[in-house]
Length: 61
Figure 1: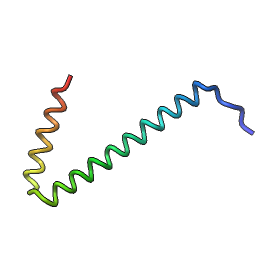
Figure 2 (figure 1 turned 60 degrees about the horizontal axis):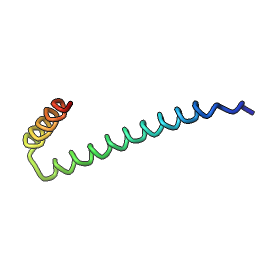
Figure 3 (figure 1 turned 90 degrees about the horizontal axis):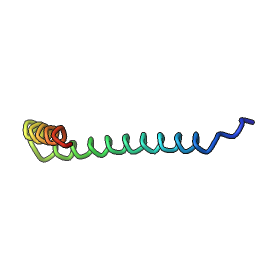
């Protein structure tokens, strides 16, 4: 039997796992959005839109 972990350790592990899950879910959602865009727009249009969005994100403070 393993010794019990301190509550702080459990909270840190839970927070790290939650952040990892949210990151994976966000990436999956983004991939679905791009895939949907690709079914309705030309490749160059999608690339232009994504480049504009990336530029906007870079300008956020």
